Length: 206
Image 1 (cartoon, rainbow, N blue to C red):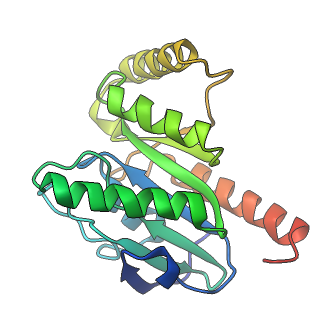
Image 2: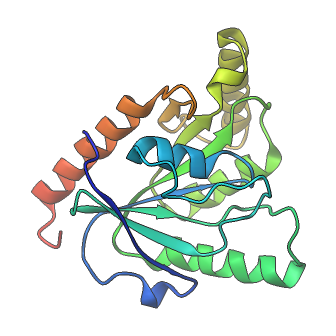
């Protein structure tokens, strides 16, 4: 799939105010400073669609972008902020979980993980929440250009081991990406395209 148009639609912290259009949505979420904005900009062929910042926690709202006029890319706040108050963080968490558990248009979430680091507890815990809540998701490993292929394979193996230890029957589908070198772009967009085709074919609501 090629992205021809990417249009910002709305930012808000209230799921009830999200777009009413019944189009499939793909949510992107990860820890602060995981490279989410850079990945979104790479996928959409835009330099400034999603705001990038050296300060972790820049995304603090639910951001909807209409892609090719037939699906939404949703940029969500990260879990595990750097410089926000506990009160603010609890509010973020509340509307993040509200989005995941109540947004009917959500087709799949992409949980972003920095491939440079070994399995982080917060990532494993968040994916456990997604699994227990029966929210479909894939893993997107970011920043693959920063380490060797051997280390990439090693770190993915470590995630598999830790997830199996947490009673996962199998590793969720995953993609290895790099925003600076466009690694994984085609695979990720093709996956979204394939899911969209199934969604439109099998669900009369879309």
